[in-house]
Image (tube, rainbow, N blue to C red):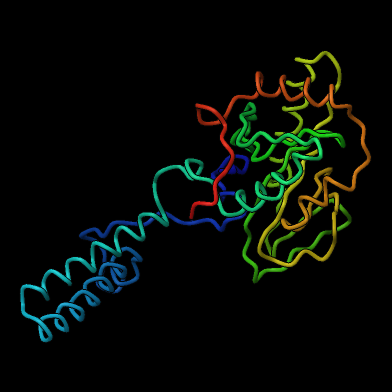
Length: 270
């Protein structure tokens, strides 16, 4: 889910910012061209293709060598395109979302219902892209859970329950996004059912070690991704089965699947 920092584009959720690749121009020096990541990538591909082609030509013949060299380039282009596709990331669930979905699925027998990738209004300043990864409705209340995969090499820490850091990076925008989306869901669902429906925002983090069970930072619950199930199960019951069904129906009607069609459970596809 993309995040927009006020006034400028910010990184995708939990991911470092990537600068756009420049195309070489006639004004670039040779050294500048070598520093261009796109050119270096193609030089690496060509070098690898030459080595593979020579090996296959020696072992078999020149035609097989040429075929192998071309195939090596094609395979690398396709592999990289799949990893950094221009197709929006929401068209396939992330690994973090699939892991959270798997935990939440086991709570259905306890009366919990989950809607995935549900749309809420965007804010005027671009903090949110208008998607709740998992909207959970159950005996202990209603929750908006966003699943995050962060770099495990960087520590996660808080400051006075008001700031969340991942290494040197302040995650204020990420928390503001989660809170905005939960607030929007609360207002919309409450308007449908005719009574107040608090929606608790939370962020389930995969990757780095989280040195606490559940920490509320800027009104957002933050915890390790593998605690998503226990996070919900250990809370007191405040809703009846009738309440759950009524809120579920309102959410299904008022919060449509973010990207059209029916909201299907996330699969464990790679």
